[in-house]
Length: 246
Ligand SMILES: Cc1ncc(C[n+]2csc(CCOP(=O)(O)OP(=O)(O)O)c2C)c(N)n1
Ligand code: SF4
Image (tube, rainbow, N blue to C red; front, side, top):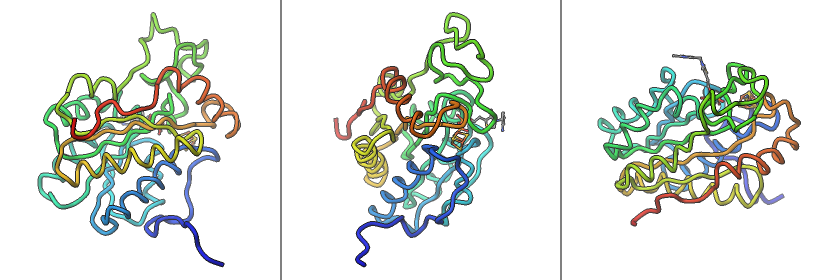
């Protein structure tokens, strides 16, 4: 039988994500883009803390596990010493936004030639589904059991829009989603664009990925995709907020 398509060589075939989790498909797209750009043996995944840590057992490629929130600073240091290596962070929304916002913004402000990839599943997945800045209004989490009351607990946070509007010199900013095949194909292009912007030394790039977390949403994998489409896509529109070369 002819092989039409297979997982990137540098991925292990097993993973430790929950059924229906969006992390696995996201990281597969990243690794496909890395291989297509010719960086299979010359890249470093800079890992945040959260369910993203499961990548420690998912990829054979080089990776570095940071303290919570510090990935953009670590990636910056790496890039300054290894200019020819493709260096990207892989972080949750809690990691890149809530706890790591200083690092994420400082790297964008300086237009560091790194790529930040952050998975927005609207909660702190690894620690049991607590509220994140990205939690939707009225969304039930373990720390908002009656639903997020924004007047008391703040409003949803839009990281790509913030970076693109405040740091207009950065190279590329986008938000994609993994809820259906059309969006998955579009996300792959976004990820490749962001990584290519780094390869061509255009500057900082950031891609946010809307992804399901069935375990903490208390939904089945299928219901999670529907919930993402009906709720998250409205609050967090997908698209390119800073295109390359503009
Ligand atoms: C300094 C510090 N504070 C808190 C924690 C606990 N902690 C571990 S993962 C996590 C949240 C991760 O959420 P997110 O970044 O959204 O990733 P997800 O697990 O949802 O993919 C927290 C608060 C920690 N490890 N270190
Ligand atoms: S808790 Fe959520 S984010 Fe973490 S592996 Fe499970 S589904 Fe994925």
